[in-house]
Length: 235
Image (cartoon, rainbow, N blue to C red; front, side):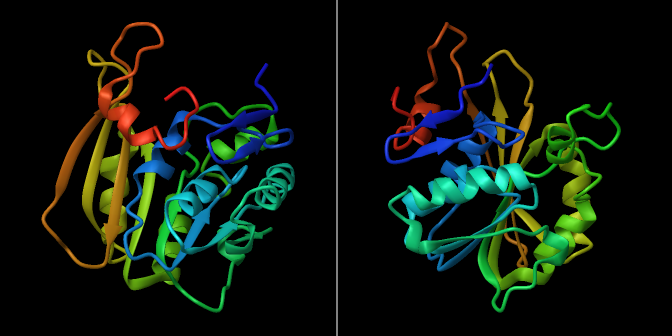
């Protein structure tokens, strides 16, 4: 059974009611998204608030975290209230489709629902968090298109199997993929996750890889330690 909290170096994530707990994908997204020059950031489907708090630790931006699931929102509020950046993070109990802020954002991040054709989890919270029924690719990209500043960035993590299709769909919304980070669990593993960065201007594509573990028990690669050392207690 997963713990009801996860401790990082500068904050604690309580996860009593959220359908999905702290995971590697969220940590990678929160630690790798480019925060240079960011003033206003948006976390779509914030869950417990993990990524929002990681961004707050890394930069001085004001951050809005939206989350429609009642249990996750309860954890989100508590985690914001108990962190040192509370005054810079706003939680909004809404889905993306009904979110109408008074300003746009120069950074948007999301760890969105993954699966469109797989068997739904009988737990409705987990099903909503990981299936596209409540937030399709088009919903997500339409929302980003509506909410992103002209010079803003959109950063998303997803399974490698979804990446090519998502990049093509993003083009239909005027969003160009300018950076790809390919993630392998082990040196011998196939790439299973992608961190994709989009903006409205087409730039030369930047590609890099990240391998998480060396393959030896509880031993992580130097690049993964470097990426996440400001957060994980074990590093």
